[in-house]
Image (cartoon, helix red, strand yellow):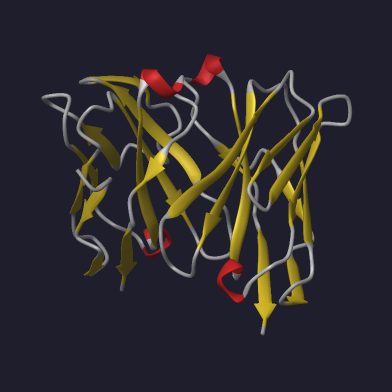
Length: 112
Length: 115
């Protein structure tokens, strides 16, 4: 079953703009991760935030986590056409061997 | 080692046939996971191994699905008596205790089409 829900389902922006995607989940977590998937291909790990962290940065990525609201956001700044992909949040729990529970994803289109 | 590899990349089969997919993880990773992804959805966890031990298999979709990792290296996922509803992308991922098992590295997937 899907653990998370991303919002919006689809997002279209122009190069240079910022893109914000949100994720909500249902149960307690150890970590929350964001992955990117280019069309029909495997997933690439972007960033991990632990349950005791509130914000994390990696390059043009900024992730926040609010465990009281069971939600996270991914901000991509100064977007590029190459950022066009689907973005998934995934939660894990040590009780399940750190198997990932994914949301349905946000489809991001960045136009030149 | 360049990453997780999966074979074949595409498989077309007729309903009722058996299919087997292979996954070769990153060599030093002792955890291996299988996921299924249908169109428009996120990946769905199926099963995982630590070395050769299958530690979780309750999430396999039915008794037609089975997985092995006999020597703790590569793994196979078999689907018996395939059904049209089995059409999906099957993804394999591996991870290492050095990463705290948190970050998983995914292969390119095997896309299964059942006619």
